[in-house]
Image (cartoon, rainbow, N blue to C red; front, side, top):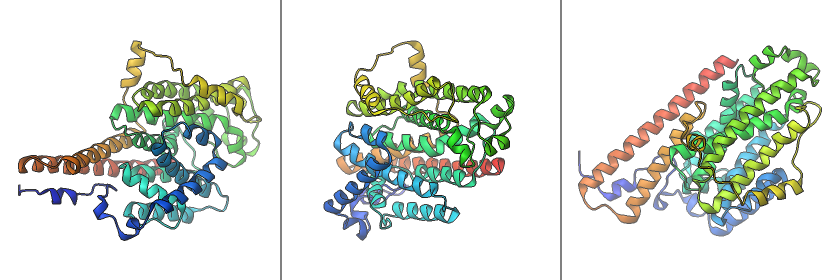
Length: 394
């Protein structure tokens, strides 16, 4: 292998990990005042559209909060576009093009795009993760149905575990086990959303519940869509979904202790607030067709206070939860996030400390290339799996 110089290493750019000297002119002009203005716009949209996230984000340390606001604003903006009744595949294609521009370092002229571009660069978020989020939005546009719980969790991974993984990277958490727990929290929250919105989704012509469960309980999906009515049988389906959500909450909580100490309160609070929605559904007799569970402000404040005093669980089951493998639906994205984190960490070490000799340089370059190739293989696998799911669900 030829001798590798430090300048060559600085030119090695996996995913969106840009050295400042390599930034395109448009990004170099992105000054502090513009960034602050964009963040203010992002914060305003979140305060209006997602009170729970806004409340939890206030508990994050300042730098992490800024990155989280940019991340969530882009995700929320994208979600709102797809939820618009006028949205179609053209809207989704526009989002894909905007994401591509973000990773090229030339974001479209939206505050959330510019702020998110800085976030993906600073925190080494691989493109396959937000791309998977857009894959989830495509499932929404297509009004797909989901045959099994595993299919539902693939959807939950796309629209929610992706956000959990990106949040973990913002908190400089890159261990595969810890990333798997972040994905579990995302899956749990989305399963809670599905359990809460059964009636609302049906009135919008959508069902996210496993079709085989409906069949087992004697529920005809088409009849339910035409006339959404609560029944004891539907209550049993909702109950089963909440039980699966609770299993993922237990796994997710096991990973909170691995987060930086100044981030744990916010993440634990967000998880507990969502868990409380499940508690409200139970209190409503599992009727989420004629009722919509929600957590009131005072209850949220109480949860925020309780989240400061987490119970320490050193049991064998807690250890098993912490070390559990990633859910199959999220495993590919977990691996991609972990590898991107490793690449960024290695490159930062080179930029900070330099290389002692040529042999070290060569070894590190080989490591970076191998990690990048493995990450690309993960992305290809993810895209192939997405196409296979699409073929199976249509």
